[in-house]
Image (cartoon, rainbow, N blue to C red):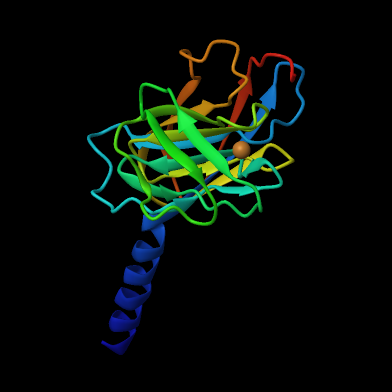
Length: 200
Ligand SMILES: [Cu+2]
């Protein structure tokens, strides 16, 4: 009888662990070179993702650059834009997913910006033309950004079938984001080859 309990406990533990999967994604360009700063995200094929609360994010301004230059949030997330320079910035976007302007400021603006629609928001600074940031708003809590090796891991993914999407700000055709359908198990992997415009 004791053996049966042990067996059941082990079985329950295995079943619990099986619910948390991760997906490793490798992104390369048309020449096979690793692509940094690509966003990959996973949307369950069957129905909607769980109703998770979007995590807030921060986009700093440091030495007249947005840091990070590329990021992603779940739809509904709030983002703060701390200015860590000793000059003023004037952050704005004309993107349809979110038009806004934070008038000339130092330090941390009082109110975060809520990104309530999915899509791409490109931000700039009205004073410094070279400043640019890309924020991809996605309808899922499951996303990650590729590192210098073109690798990203989406963790804490419930075992399920997903549509995996890859995006990069230099995509040749921004409206044609490559997708793959994958049954994600305990430890799954996917690879994307993106057609990118040359870096400026
Ligand atoms: Cu500026």
